[in-house]
Length: 151
Image 1: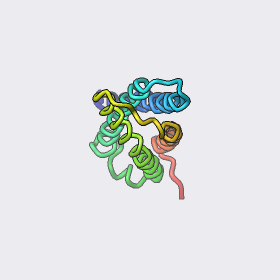
Image 2: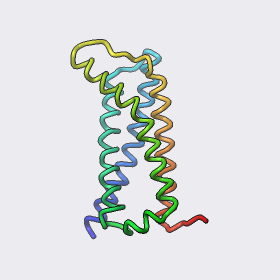
Image 3: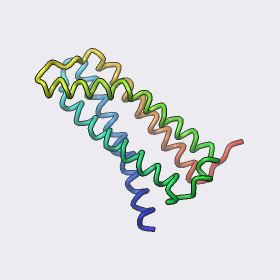
């Protein structure tokens, strides 16, 4: 019982902190594009977002498929679970370009080279879309937890 509770708490905390981090990253990227932000603030928010995403992936996988919640059959037959996973996959796909570029930024900073911030506005927009998708995941998850079914 304690493990169930801790996994649920970690999962929910990672959602909240991850939501804050991805929106903060987007805001910092927007400021950077306007010439008033700092690369380091973007990278700090990105680090928090990455850690939260990893926690969400691990705790979510354990809860859905590790026997800690309602069981794999419940989740696989629940349309809102599929919707939630669709949002998750969209976030992962959207995250590919910012992730690769921000890794390049880190490498450039480590070498003392200039950082190419030309796509900062695009990455800010992507970050804010990811935040919206996270909210939609929470809405789907709350319906799923209450057994809401469609069809």
